[in-house]
Length: 265
Image (cartoon, rainbow, N blue to C red; front, side, top):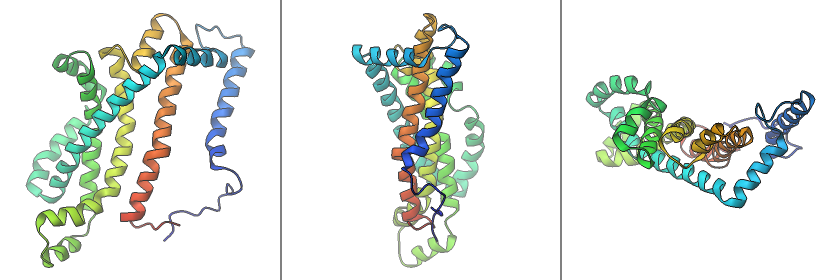
């Protein structure tokens, strides 16, 4: 089975063109509207103003500091969430008692994941790294746990019984059958959870820290620097898009091809 039919009319053009074209059109329309209607910089900036803000941030090092702080928090919170969520999801997918106990809790707290935890996170961890990582953890944890359970539940029971009949211990079944079988769903959960993580990050950084892209946006608002606000929004979207397209999407595709039902073309 092939993963997709690639004769979609794009074969003769570079893939990056199709990815970049909508953004190029959007930037041109943005500048056209600003000039045509003489929009005040206090309302919305021009494209050159945003570019100057970016160059200024690179020159004084502040932009690199904000981006670095945000990336470190996202990476830490996501890694901790995956380390806890995958074992819990595996346990829920294999043990009915554990699933019966945790499923109602999972459904309840999944609604509260992310920015809803910011007020209590600042009370528990103070204003800084710990509170923001906790918010990101909650944004990712429930999504990955649910997808892990879903992945385990899709593995045919016959495969588990076959492994057991061949003498495989429970740990070996988890390592050789359940984890590989659930891996496509786990990677999908991580990919989805990271999207929620960035939303929680920006909201938390506006409140609980003095560095990061969220703080940069919040501080720029106080000084009516709309060019910095728009620059921060563009950076958040660009970083997430780069991570998703260059790292997460290829990882998900290779995982599905390796362990799923789709063969590479």
